[in-house]
Image (tube, rainbow, N blue to C red; front, side):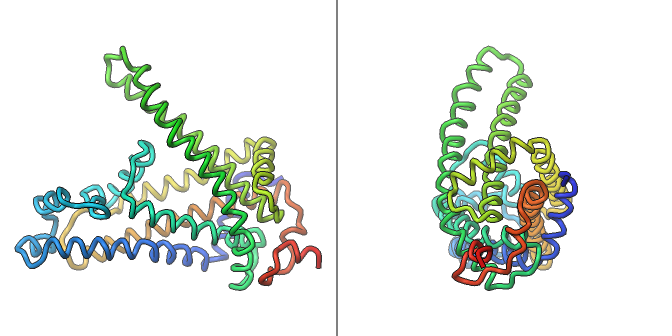
Length: 334
């Protein structure tokens, strides 16, 4: 029987054998973020103009100018703050996630477009990892097209579940329950521990939903399921029967993610001068993004390996590559 560690190693191997996917999703991330970067660059350039502050800002960090820019910034400009430097950006995103902070509309719009693109490519990515052999561009995009609308329906369910978690449960935990639990607390450390415990509870619920929806995608692709509700029920059943293995595999991947974070925390550049240090900082940041994407792909590949090793039928993944517009199910009929 496939163990969590063997599934994880198999997932690493599958990701390594398909480097084009990693490069592709990295290019996708760059493509979505580039317009935002250019827009922010234009705002900064317009505010600096030909002033003396421009030379000072180009040579290093001009905190006084930065504060002046932040005070008048709107929209995308409000994201340009000291917390974007180095590892501070990771901590800022983590804080916004756990505290359910709102982002500017332009950021939400870009993030939505990014998610939709991921939904489109998810079917092709999981299909490639499930087959564990080259499918070429036509097979990859055929699988992506087949599962796009199915995963859109799954995304509606995911949005409803996460909306309950972030817009209802989160405010109740930290806006209602936390004040009641700490109303008579006089020691700050106790209040901190209570809040940390609530973060753990909330994080475990989010992680559980994440695992369920991941295996729903895996089962939908490997078994060519059309009903996303059926895929979710099948995913829950698989996790229940293999709770220890699924949980252990998730923890292994989580440790891999934390290792990437720790590495970036050690080498992330701080605020420095211009010139080569800017390009070095950009290179380190892009390596971190590559690392995060690699971990995400490893999650999918290892979960696919665990499912196939414990339940899937070989015939589902040994059929010929899909040819557009045929679905993977048509191959089995042939």
